[in-house]
Image (cartoon, rainbow, N blue to C red; front, top):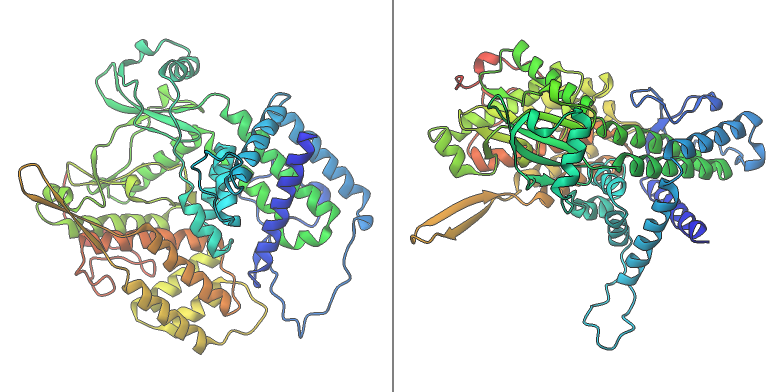
Length: 542
């Protein structure tokens, strides 16, 4: 009975998502291959789908007869049954019942938040119901999988409605740390030897604790300072159970209601599943780190930027040991000025140029350059850390981004409109002049993002100042861009949203560290429209 209740609740969530997708009008998603029985839970996340726009002009598009469940073929039925069986096998016998009870508890607690208290002595205030708030709270209580899914929503304004993207910015991936003896057991099991044989010391208090892993500072017996990223025990079973259920639920919904197939719900669920399960394999993140370090070496950038070295001999799928980088956050203007001899402008130009060069020269790019993942080291170099989230840009999108960058540098708003048209998907003719006017308005809003100045009184009577920009302003600018494109009949790919969000992070850092810099006119700043001249980077500081 409880299981059926949870299934109904989650099914309603999928229906809600499908309806939310419909609100976008011009919605483009990847579609699975035409051969229905070729679907598999083990599909490669890099597979290519037909990029088919769903936006159709009602005046010209012929109305097709709706497909019903009775039209399903034997091959489609067999494919669905195979996926259900495979999901059950991969999830394991324990995970399903345990997660069902956790889901039931999470749903009940979330419902109670919006119900009046039955106790006359209760001081709890009844919350006004809001679907985005309710869904965010439910996701946080459901644990790692749904926290990651919430972060996916927060970083995908080209896919989800504004109110959900904004609300899920609050979905923080921070959890109570596990006890040291639990983490120690994971490390020793993966190493196959006692911790004392590898590490001279390990801090029992973690530097950070997230839904999937927690990080501890340590020192190797050979003397190097390192950080140890340790996957929490049994988290893989939980994720596999949740993600398999989400995928199967989307497949069942599409099977019984074929009209949902136009949203490619199961294709999205399958790709999210592949992407999240990749995060469980620290060897993949280690490979990303090594590839980025190779990129720095091949482009003679090791003097101005770095990424942590991975100690492969002490790393595995569940434990990663890497060099510890010490430095200041990109938001710490005073510390950066001290490190760079009052020249923070050169540092942010270096960071921007290195990242831009990586976008143009690597098969993937760092897709999470928030202030915690971008450091200014004590020797003046820029340190890139945490390569768990990377983005990949298709050739079509990359070409359009180049066109957009050139038009942006020239202040050519019609050119920007045409570049976005080349990137997006639509079946209607776009009014370039009106689109260009809307883009100009968005660019004016981008220029109006304000930097906050905070003054703090110290014990010695002096004042310390800090600069920052509200994170929500970055999201709102990105949402404005998405809204403008949709209002003009376009739907942009998700990778463009990821690229733009990273660019907005850099815009934030530029306002703090180089407020007077002319980004478009300064020859030291490389853009996506042309190759970065390494000789224009600031002098090497090693």
